[in-house]
Image 1 (cartoon, rainbow, N blue to C red):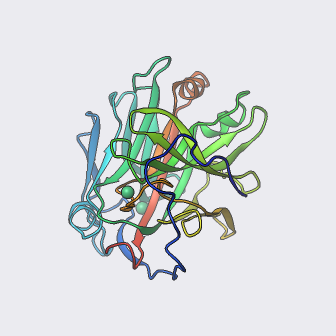
Image 2 (tube, rainbow, N blue to C red):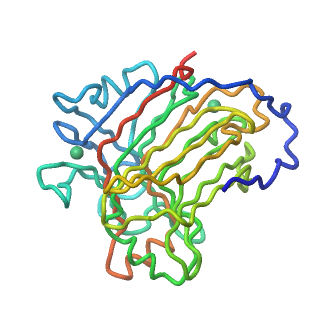
Length: 317
Ligand SMILES: [Ca+2]
Ligand SMILES: [Ca+2]
């Protein structure tokens, strides 16, 4: 499942990293969780970003300000749209279609809303940014691909850009830009399938260069049904970096989507300093894809529930 594509030709800055040695299994500690109920709400979502505030009584570490932003590990947590208005894309707390007594968070994209040539694109993400030495973390979240994804399976085009999560080490504004991305992909005549890649980019922007890629065409992509995604990332070199993703179906069946031993920072970063920015919940794609879904009379809609984020023992040093 794991293969290396390139060793960064033309990148000369910093030595290739060396493995830090045997890595111990970290002890994980939950830092934040949310079931999107209680007083949790999204505010000011007409702008290019929005905030989530509130908490759930009885749910430990569930306050979006005091626990997520005020805790020792994470900086700020914000929703980011980049552009557009609520008639084009929106985030709302809605009833769970499977249980009206449960509230969940909905990402909704009705049309492309981010200007870009040759065609506008679309983006909603939860950005947890300005994290201090976030080197080892894992999270789980329930996901429901609620609308638009069934018609995508009928689309006679390949899909290479439909992002559901992204992890930055480092972000584009920093040196040694590097990201790990969890995507849904599709061949021209095939069903949706799972894909991840790690990529670098030069500081002045330009094309992304693959460091590794992992693809899983056998695990299911459940549509209109809850499933759980579990993601683990440990900062490290080709020898000791770790990226793992599991999918658990509603009936409890577990699938290993990705299990990559590979660099989880820029391979030439001389001083890796953790994942300063992560997007554990994301819906980011091309205007062409969104326009196709819209033309079929639907919108792109993802529901999220029961987010829980833990950091490993080596996360804060
Ligand atoms: Ca809930
Ligand atoms: Ca970093």
